[in-house]
Image (cartoon, rainbow, N blue to C red; front, side, top):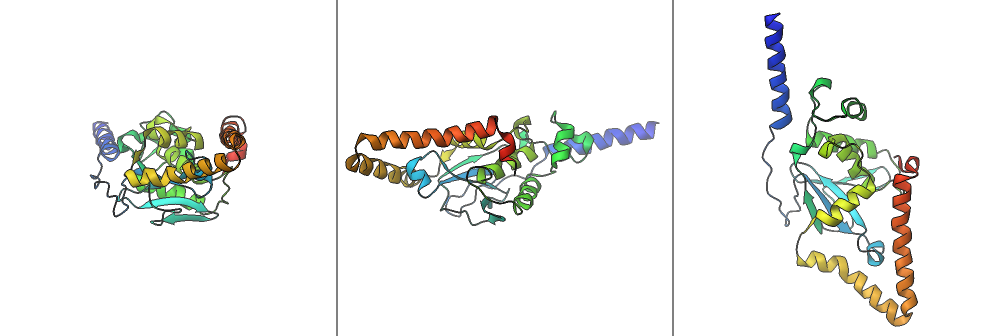
Length: 235
């Protein structure tokens, strides 16, 4: 009985070490496009010209390599679609749950997390989500890059939550992400400002109303689909 108790205590210590000991991350390197444990964002052609808060997102491995769901059955690795990174947000691995077994969960979603496919490392979670989305059809409105990132965050149980969705990811990037530099800000907003100016000059104020309606309908769709018709977004 004493031997079993000692083994149990030692096993618990090993679990705690696995859960909390992390390799140090290299610093973010904009020039080499390395963003360790970051969410990354870049503007989309045409769509971002009309709604600059909409863009393409990806998630990075611990070594900074970018993975993004960029097309049907396609998860790109180190080839970020639609241009270089404009914004990034580094996440804290301490807020993830990496259980080596069913008893090693530090989150409150032990069984749901295990059923989804809990990972034992950050890279394991990203790679597992990547393998899943390699067999998914891309759709801007129902299954897109934000869906992929949300799946990764749920697999990590980031922040103790398994309710990450497209809207959460978009909101996180919109309000907390950092700009890579002044040129990234210019690249993201100059097309929108140009389209806005030309539209008002050629069409007049009705163009501004139409642009507002476009943004309203786009945001409205994602809010309704995410919170009222969740079955439409399962991918």
